[in-house]
Length: 128
Image 1 (cartoon, rainbow, N blue to C red):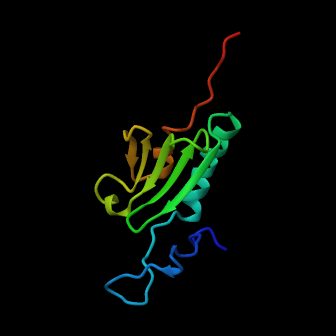
Image 2: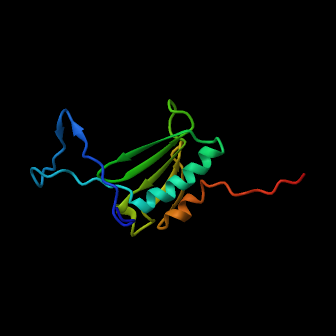
Image 3: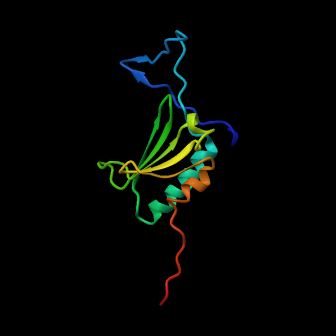
């Protein structure tokens, strides 16, 4: 698998039948997904925050209009943050955004690394 190829997941199944578009019978709906490089960047930040003890779980959701990486402190709670990729906004505000649990868009942009910087705690100097 190369670095450019997207990671492909099986299609969603509803009641044993895959969802089908009305325009092209027999074809599956195209789902928006994160590429391998995008997932590496997201998981790099996620791994640092898990090691710090801030986050504990995550969930991936792929839809026709956007892909969402949700971050949880506890599995049974609502997500603390959602990292969203919405290609429809790529030419306007940027395809990537970080959304807080309250719905506040913390950062939006074209570069995923710069958008994820809002979640990444920097190294702080502690005076003794």
